[in-house]
Amino acid sequence: MKEQEIKKTVRERYGKLAKTSSSCCGPQVQSCCGASDVVKNISKSVGYTQKDIESVPEGANLGLGCGNPVALASLKEGEIVVDLGSGAGFDCFLAAKAVGNKGKVIGIDMTSEMLEKARDNADRDGYKNVEFRLGEIENLPVADNTADIVISNCVINLSPDKERVFREAYRVLKPGGRLMVSDIVLLESLPASVQKSVAAYIGCVAGASLKEKYLEAIQKAGFAEINVVGETGFGTDFIVNDPTMKAIVEGEHISKDDLSRAGKAVRSIKVSALKKNK
Image (tube, rainbow, N blue to C red):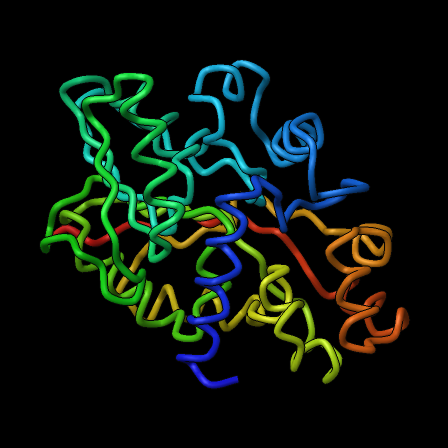
């Protein structure tokens, strides 16, 4: 798929997700579409606590994550946070509580429907230290040396130019700033049928890069002290039984064997890194 086609498809799909509140990513759960209890179960399975889930505005958690970058970020009062692909604002609202009124959180998303939902959530619950901006994660609408920390949750895998995303993250971080991302990577190449699937791309699978390439992209951007602080599998059962993946099989004629192979290749990782002090 061409880069613009990918972005157009992702934007349209996540615009619909903002309106329907269904999810598309979440390791080792039986279902990832539909009711609020399913969304909560997904969030718990990737590292969020019941307190986290209950502390954010209703509708902010769409169950789209593959980890909890906020929990791993060790946020401090007064810090500035930039969230790449902020969606309806779940991680932003958690971060806002951690940095307090002296801090600030900037959420970036390219989907206007998601931004509208996030802004409504912030207004309804009176968040004054959160701002949501329209923009692509490859071209962040943020000034150089702005953030103490950049976070992202199951979004960079959707970008066709991951190296540029990490260069942008590096640019907006202050010297000594931190990167903390949860994302999807591959241990081996996906079957060709899955690689070509637009639906699998939106399902957070086909857009993923090999683990070593992903980490290499972070290094090329200039980051130091790159560490994989957590890694889990999606599991074959998830890939074969999940409703999103079933739709891929039925709509794009991908065999269950190929999906099973994809399931064994897919990993959810949490990565930390630092921008060097100059």
